[in-house]
Length: 146
Image (cartoon, rainbow, N blue to C red; front, side):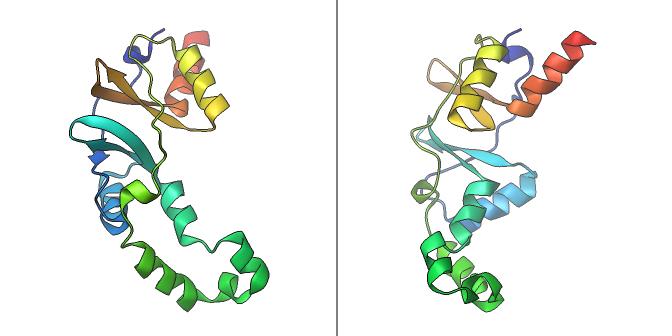
């Protein structure tokens, strides 16, 4: 089974110069776990809800230094406002890992496991044609063994 058989063809994208706030709004609007970052038609990265959340959380050294960061909602809220001004390019996963539509799904899934990612853009001839997730692959395999 090939990636093309299970990929989602409607891909939500965002530009690398978009703000983190814009990114969060698009993620919410499209109810997606991640967006493919496209610059001039070229796929340059991926940004996920987890990436946004990790950026908002205090860094580990900050927590050790002062435990109030974990309990102080005002601190977190202030941090969110500052971070929402960051550009997508500053926290996106890059360099982007992609697969082709003719790649076997087992190989694509293995790549995701090794790279510890849950979704990859599908790119053919430099053009974004879809996205495939680990969930897509697992569901397809489960259907196959029924």
